[in-house]
Image 1 (tube, rainbow, N blue to C red):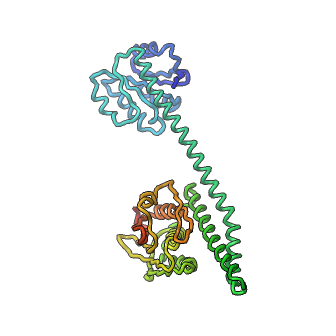
Image 2: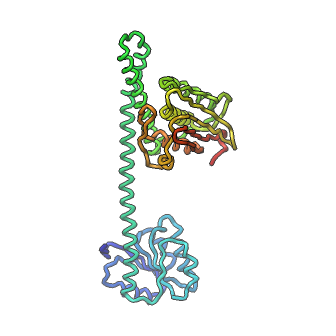
Length: 376
């Protein structure tokens, strides 16, 4: 990588006039933009005002001024990322020990030839330029991610209304299905209704997930009965489960009060139940349980379905990994619902985990604080 010296500003700090002149002489003809000071007290101020690309320090070693300046520069958020060449004598090991924990500080033993000094400076500038390129690329990647998340949010929001309307129309038709004489049409309406329900759930998850990624969605913590919330969610899922002949057993009979975001916790339970139905065999069973333990309500959703392969278990909650899976009746799953569950549980100071054996079923667990004093 070519280094154009004229693009870089170097701050020279040396409390000796003769040493400063020697340093300026060594750098003469290199076209650096030089800022100089003979006062230790001015280094930090100049660094803030001029934002140099590199600072070269040699200040009254016997008085410890150089060490103080380095510490001041590296402990300020405004100047800590500026690399420093600290010029010292070969036997000054104590100086190195005092600032060794700071990043981007390189010790240089005097005296230096011009060739060696310029080489040291170029090495620092090459490293600095590489860091800037990486930071620029990271920012571009973050811009793409933010744009993608915003696009997801807009798509989900705009599609939710028409899909929701279609869902209501199909529900109205379902209430009048006895008037439809053709059994084939009844079957097609049922398939359309199931597909629409899946699409609506996916859009809901996509909208909430994108909002959480954009920082739009924040938990609204309150104390509520999780038992009552679970009863509502289970009631809505029972019709879907019934279509596969699956029985749901809700054992959350005791009043369990928790401190969390009500809608987020409903979303978590809804997604776990939806997955349990999707991956259960026809005529199977799903059980919902809960128990208080160490200041948390631990909720479990158990099915005896097809289970999760060991390959997928490793990456099930991995950030950024969404793999397509299929239920027992070829229902398509994106994995987005589980990512949403993980995010929502974490935002509410809980944990989520699972046990699964392929061919025997899966149990998902998640914990919720029972008090606003519980944080982890």
